[in-house]
Length: 227
Image (cartoon, rainbow, N blue to C red; front, side, top):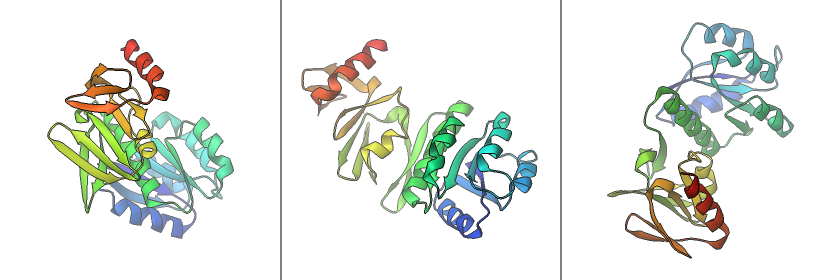
C-alpha cells in the first residue's frame, strides 16, 4: 500500500483526489493540505511514499517545494491547470504530470507508475493493478508473456491466465519497465525474456505466434542483442 498526501490550495481539487484515491486499492491518501508549510512539517514526521502536488501554490511554488524535499526521495506527481509547467516539472524528476481537470484513468496511470517504482525500491517483484470488469487485478510483470490490443481493450496474457482491461497500448507502455517489454506491432507488446524465436514477419512467445511489424524489427533485434 502506498501512503500518499496531496497538496493543493483549492479544496475542490483535493476532493477530486480523495474520490479518485478511494477507487485505487493500493493507494492510501492519508492526508491533504492547503498549504506547503503544514505539508512539509508532516513529511518530516510521517512515512509518505507519494505526493500529489499542485504547482501554483500561494505560499511556495510546487516546483520550489519539490526541490526542497528532493533529499527525502519521495515520488512526486504534479497536478496543475497550466500545461506550460510540464517541462519544468519533468526536469525536477517528477514521476508524472497531471493536467486539471484530472481524468480518473490518468490518475490511475500515475498511481501505477508510483507503485512500480516503490516495488523496485523495496526489492519486491514488480507488478501493476488493472481493472478487469468491476475487479482490481494485480498483474505480476514477471509473469506477463505478451499483451494484445483491440482498440482500447487490452488482453494481458500470462501462463494459464488472461486479464482484460480497458486501456491503450500506449498507456500501458508508459507504465511497463522499458528494459523488460517492447512493442513489436501496432497491436502487440511482448516480454523480451519470453521470446523464443524471431522470424522475418513474426515472433514466437511461449507457444504463440505473434506478428512482427517491419518498422519494429530493427529495434527488437538491437534490444535482444544487448541482452
